[in-house]
Image (cartoon, rainbow, N blue to C red; front, side, top):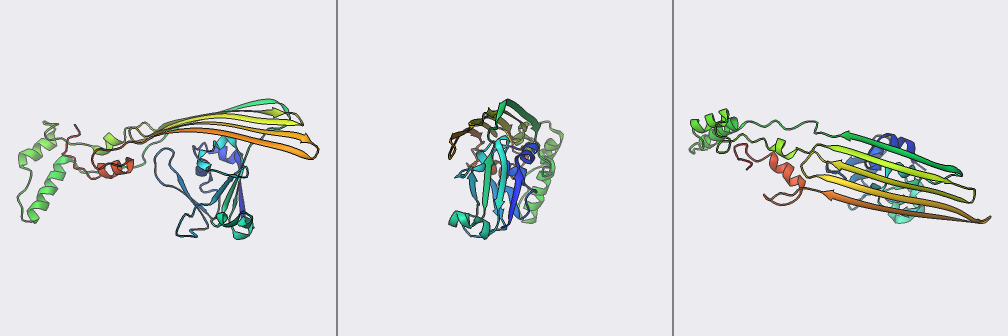
Length: 281
């Protein structure tokens, strides 16, 4: 059938916080998009377009068991296979109607214990902002709008001059709401330690991962801790035992607002609507 495979080494090179981010642009016929810029936000995946009006997400199988790919440590992935057509996904039943993504995690190999460390850090920032007019220009435009509607202007020439020269920063401010909201430093870093080895009869792989991501919006952060242990035991010539254990702990911070309630999406909406002549404190 129609399948695409992405190697774990290629995913690791991307230095992403979510395995799906590393697949963007790497898999033909698969659309992957972020639902928001919030740290740790879900990714929307559609294989060969939308096939239903309901939930169009594919089926994720991690080492043969259903799970959430966004909670996986990218450094633990050995390979990912995407089954795109009905023929290849048919063995998984109706849950595979929107495609299947098979994830295989790394396992131990015979030999001396091997310790590997990988880490990265970086910064994120907004690529562009909406250009907002100053308080003085906004007041002039607002007066014109009122006058064209047959009403009296709201601001006097003295008000406009005070907006322009900044002599009265609290009574006649020129507030940059975008600059106030997007003061997060966008710093992100992640670390992973992997221990693997074993004998012909017992093989093991253990990994510990940590990542922290600060958003570009104030008080928008994500902290994640991962632990995984995969164990392979050859019981007899005809019986093998495979045991997988995984633990994840996620902490999310998302700012709220007292104006209309809701999360950061409402803050983004408001900072582009509130007039610059309103003082921020």
